[in-house]
Length: 263
Image (cartoon, rainbow, N blue to C red):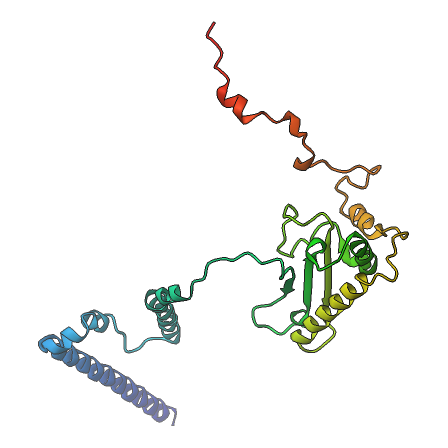
């Protein structure tokens, strides 16, 4: 009984192996016929010069990893074609840089995570230099700073896109943000409306609050937290703006000065 089962099993294995090699032989014969047809037909050779090389390296038994690699190569080739043929067309949409006019002093900031959903993507922040806001006089500027509270700072935020050495920085910067609504446009609208209300109230001359000093505790707390030396005994770090101008050499004297005579 065991001998009969063993003989039957060997017969099945022989049949499977024979059919496997037979199929491989048939595929190899078809590939060779296809190669000969392509080689003999000049029209097919003109259609694609690389067909012969591709067929020479073609493996009928490619693994799944090989197909994934081919798919990756096709994707890369697709983007290379876009760069080669489509990118030059973008020159027609090129626009020269135009600095913002005094009528558009606001800088709107947003956060993105590359298309991923995140609560912070709804937040909108408005940053503007106080000197460029439509305020009537110094009293209105002082009142605006009082109403802004900790939203008014001497320096712009680090990620606001505004350099500390830019013009119109003598009165500091105003920052306001909102992330309470489900749509980014709603948050931006609320921040813009809040800024308009502050400007309207600051330009109101009924009470100028001239006798009320500015509250700079939030600025001092930030300096203490940064621990860069500004918090020590009221020390202010010098900058290039504090360099005495009378120490600078006169360009005319430098050019007209005669070189020293050799000893």
